[in-house]
Image 1 (cartoon, rainbow over the protein chains, first blue to last red):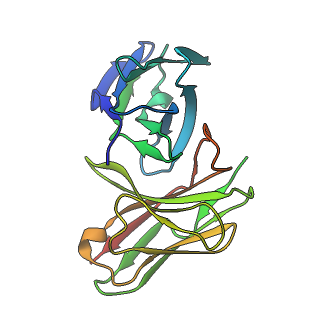
Image 2 (image 1 turned 90 degrees about the vertical axis):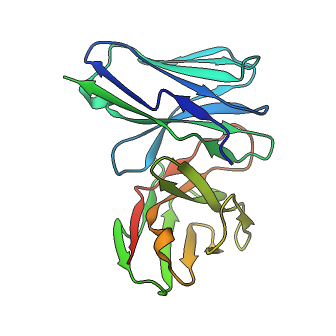
Length: 110
Length: 114
């Protein structure tokens, strides 16, 4: 069953611009995680935000979590062509399994 | 760094064949997972395992089975492959069943069933 849903499905921006992706979910969570996937490869963990946290930073990444709205956003600042990838949110609920959304395809044009 | 290795990058099989997908992790992780990824559907959990010889069904276990005889190895088995099992298969592991653990993924196996 899908828990997280990313929005938009696809995003195309110019190098140097900021990219924002959103994730909405339906049930209560322990945490929300963001992963990145380069074309045809496995997923790589980017950042985890716990349910009692509101904002977290890691390098050029900024993640927010609003549990009242059951939503999260991932902001990539000063994007680079190498940031081109699919980005997935994943939610961990009480049974410690991760449920993934369908992903946002980000294209950063040089 | 944790390494999760999937035995094949690409695999082509015929309908009705028995198919084994192998996954090995080198960091003594307790948990291992098999997902399949299809365009427009995202990642869906097939099976997972919290310990040796232990397995639990995920969201789409039909047509699949798994084996975990050793802690580092988790195998996905397609008893009789069908064309609707053509997909990208992703293996993952995590350190434990505690909350807030992240997954480490292999590079994936693109399986085509003809």
